[in-house]
Image 1 (cartoon, chains in turn yellow, orange):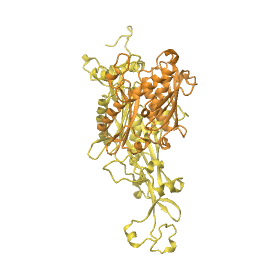
Image 2 (image 1 turned 90 degrees about the vertical axis):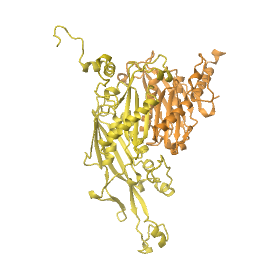
Image 3 (image 1 turned 45 degrees about the vertical axis):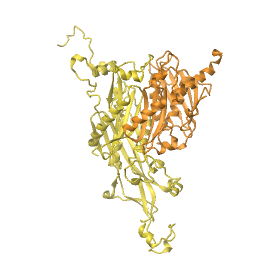
Length: 382
Length: 251
């Protein structure tokens, strides 16, 4: 029955209710009246642990070495990887660090590939340079001409530390070698750069040819958020993963005559990066039924009391959109990979901004993240 | 007066701000100075201020370089954690600002604040300094917190008092903060670990940070458990300071 014009209706259309009373609106969706037999569902139609539809498209940019567009619902991230050459001559500390071979070995993983003793070169020489920009107009608050916001800066830092701690890129893929020719047969008079005085025959047979690092590839990883509707980190990290997987480096070598690094222009000689694993990032937020969650002059229940009475109504929402992010304070972020036997390995776990989530909740979130890993594996076609 | 293994705190080392504190972390050797001004007017961006509560601003100044993206990130962590416990709607606070400035005076290894390096080793020192400075400025808070850093070696051994070198060589590093009521307020973990390891780390950190319930449940008078937890150390530091500051009252 449509209300007639004579009797003005007191009800509001949902969109108005949502913007006037955002907290009550989301709460009404999550806790429907017991009689109505409706499931508890979020305002965006998802169940609490459901992620948004994700799509990834690799190789979208033609002039980058690798690129990808990832969409996570209405959040869209474009990532481009550009490789540039860093000569060892341009590294101030190179002669010192290469002669001593001092590289502290970080984050050793047991039972993996033979450890590269110079693995920390990626971090020491800053061979990976991610940057994230929240472009003008990606969300209403972003005006043109403004400096990078604190959010964009901290996300750039998070991408960089994630690349370092997950050890995604192998240093060996980024090295450009020079195979020092064996000049023994050619005669001693041309042995110009050979510091090794006399190489006797047996050791030259046993020893592989002398190699020298002449340059590194530096990967500039630029992420641009085209549309921002919550959960930037998941989208940005997925874009970085997809773009790095798409990255192809041309074959490069040191040319003695030209005294520079030359690159082959043949496509079939270019090689992809060998990435270590697939660390997938999943974010969550906590929505509290108490509208005054940020205002607690009252004495708070202790952690033990909270466990005893589960009256504290709160929902853990996976992959929050922009509307939900505005209503929540407490955030969780889990970056998880799986080893060969399928056991989850946590690369990073963060929880901040509140006190309602404890140990057991985090255990469940790790399980949810493990499921999300399977989803992302198919999305990224890993 | 402070147990040497729980760090050295001093209140009001500088006099112009509303509250200030220095703190030296015994584990990592970081020495941090914190200053708080609250509540103050933030005239520059009145329209950006939230009408119903105080705006919290955190600035971190590293020891040897100028602030960069890593500092923005750690400022975000501090803002989220402190924003959850500061009572920004108390009288006099809405539409005003709580400005917290933390300066790393000396400490550890300069590598720990290099570009793209992990901030976890510095985080406990920053958090404790922030709390002491807020207490010194009498900013109302719903509860306080204590925090600790724990490293797990590649062989699975848990190191409760890791040095910076230990943290560098560890398989995973964890920073946890617990409220004075035993809630898990913050966890920042990095490295490579499984959930069971984290659970062990959590339980260990809880015993380091938090007093057992029965020990603190005296009637009005806090009785301390045996051993020195961070919570006990914090209570004693504040008690000393108040005893000193209000000596004329008690005399």
